[in-house]
Length: 198
Image 1: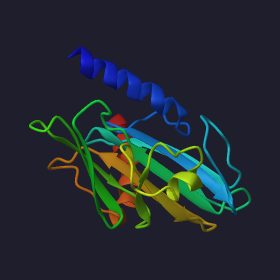
Image 2: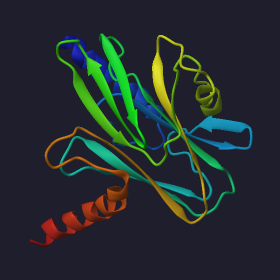
Image 3: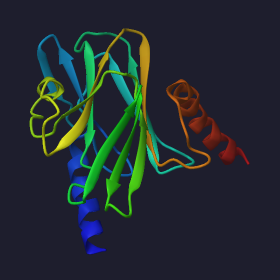
Image 4: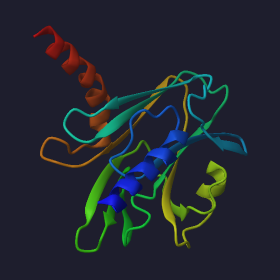
């Protein structure tokens, strides 16, 4: 029990460095970064990126969140990078299964595996070396031979577009594909207004 509590606290501390992230995955570390040409960096808490707006919402039917990235211009970035890993660094298993734009992370003890589902805006997803993560581009190009595997993805940006990420624990009410995310994002606010009006 103490071991699980310490792991949760550690993950919470690591996630402080994510971009303005008040909502976290059920497990693991999720980071966002940007690049402009050959220069890239991980986004710091509350860092403003001209032409890009980030908005997070908690999911109503599962532990997890949905993120909308609204791009109005490309003044400071031409690519968005993301990374995810370290579901439970001290456990026996952290395994990723990638299918198109989505992935499943299996983590925990070998006889008590847990899963985390994620849907991303890109199929450009790589298994990379989490020990070479000084910048997004370095991690993206690091190769997959490592004892600390993480996933990294690259999303080319286009002006006047929106990208979505969703991390969740799957259940009968929560099982998402990418095409569902814009409506899911919009309906979360509608659901709140409906409840407030009753």
